[in-house]
Length: 114
Length: 110
Image (cartoon, rainbow over all chains, first blue to last red; front, side, top):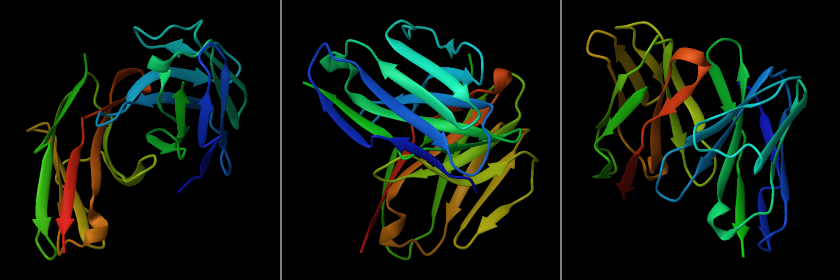
């Protein structure tokens, strides 16, 4: 397998603040990383595809100015939730693509916006 | 739009039972189908299937793909309480994106 880490695992913030989540591939290089969001009792919804050195591709309905993604190296992608609001509270999961068909997921970050 | 449908949505069994979880898909340019197990955190990888009719096996879990029927099953034999989880099916289609089903919640009672 392959290992992906996320930091922090849990964050609680006040409405209006920005939160940065880091996603790292620890033992492989991920030219492509993905960011997902999962609401309670629902499946994973792809938010954006992040390619190293280029702009992220966002899914329909996901605001790129609100969810800033940076993929500066082959092992690190960051997601910044800007001016977070309670409706942004969710479980955010990243994954790194290894090879042609395999995605390995990070442990997720639970964001709670008060 | 790519689509993945899993059934049943939830299932309660007793330890020792055998379960079959179903996944069907409609995907443009199918590349592979993946099964994941999700407990409290992010999904953990179980199987990747690309060829029809070839069973993949890992301990008490096995899975097979039927490209003609656009479906896959995940079997768990001799279930244990530790098998309780959400089982996610996902398919790789065009643009290297994974489309997930809603998941099947399996509860195994002692």
